[in-house]
Image (cartoon, rainbow, N blue to C red; front, side, top):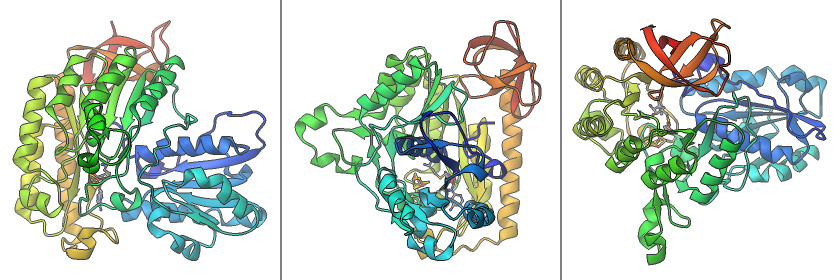
Length: 477
Ligand code: SAH
Ligand code: F3S
C-alpha cells in the first residue's frame, strides 16, 4: 500500500546523504506527517547545507536536531512530544546542542512551544525556512528563536532541494503551498496559510534536473493540486484582479500536468492531493492522453453523507463525487482511485456511516487512508460543533470502514491478476532480497524475482500471477 501518511509507528525516519564534504556541523532532521513535510525537509536541508550542516542519521552526533512536525490529528502531536522528551539526556551532555521544531506544530503552537517544552530552542513555521540562518545565529548566542510568519508568496521556487533518504528513482516536486478550502475539521489552513502556486518554469526546471539525475518518477505535490493556477503570483481566489495579460497567459493544473508530461517524457508523473470540487474533466483527459501520466488519483471524500459533507464544508455532494468518478472511468478506463475517510465526525449518525460504506462499495477504491475524527483546537468544527460521537463508536465505525476497504482492495488486486503491466522498479522487496518491489501505473505494488541485468529505476513488464490484499505477485516477461 502506498505510504502517503507514513505509518505512525515508523514516522520520524531520519536521513543522511553526503552533501558538502567541507561541511563540519551535523544536522539530524526527522519528518512527520504528510509528503509535503518530507518535501519541505529537503528544502530545509538545502538551506542548512549552505550554512555548514550535513545531515546525519546518528542523533548522538548532531549539533542541531530538527523535527518537522504534523498537527493533523492529536496523535501526531503526541508522537512528536514523546520524541522530544528522548532528547533530554543528549541536551544535558551537550549544552551547545540546538533542538528545533519545524512545520505545522510549530505554526500552531508558536511561542507556547517554547513555554511548554523547555527542550526546544527554535520554532520555525512552514513559510519561514529561509530565515533559519538568522534564527540559528540567535540560538548560538543562547537565545530562543522563533519565526512563524506565514506568507502569501513563499514557494521556495528557487531552492534546489537536497534529495534525502530516497531511492534515487522517485521524488516529490511541490507545486502549491497552503490551502484555502477551510474544511471545518482541518488544521492545515491555519498551519500552512493561504494557498499559492509556484512558477511553472521553476517546476519544469526541477523536473528536468531530476530526469538528468536518473530519477524516473515525480509526484507533483500540493494540499490541493487541482486548484493550481499560475498567473504571475497571488491566490486563485484573487484571479479576478489579475490583468488581461496575466489572465491570457495563466496556467491551470491540467495545463501544468501536460507541460510536465511533455518536458520529461521518460518519467512517470503522479500528483497528490486532489480535491473533488476542483478536479476537472480536463485533468482526466491529460491523464488519458499521456502514457507517462499515471492512471491513479488520490481523491479524498471524507464521508458519503451529504449532511456530513455540508458540516465539513466540503464543496461537493455525494452525487457530484460519484459523477466525477464515473466520468473519470469513462475517460480513463483503467484508472484507480484511493480515498481519505473520517469516521465519527460531529453529529454523524449510523445512517450517515452506512452512506459512507455504500459510497465506498460504489467507487471500489484500490486503497484508503482512514481516520477517526480528532478535534483540532481553533478549527471551525472545534469552535462551532460538538465532538459528540463517543470514542468507542468512532472506533467501531472506523474498523468497519477499514474492513470494507480491505475487501475492496483485495477485489481490485484480484482484477489485476492474469494480466501484464509495465512496472517501475523502486527497490528490493523488504521480505526477500531476491525479489524486486515495483509499482504499476495504478500504484499497485508488485513483487517479483530479480533477473540478471535488472536494476532499480528500470521499467520492466511483469505478468501478475497472484495477489494478496495489498500486493501483486508477478514474474518478468
Ligand atoms: N489536502 C490535504 C489533506 C491534508 S489532511 C492533502 O494533501 O492530503 C489529510 C487527511 O487527514 C484528510 O484528507 C482527512 O481525511 C484527514 N484529517 C484531516 N483533519 C483531520 C481530523 N481533524 N481528524 C481526523 N482526520 C483528519
Ligand atoms: Fe485540509 Fe480540506 Fe485543505 S482537508 S488541507 S482544508 S482541502
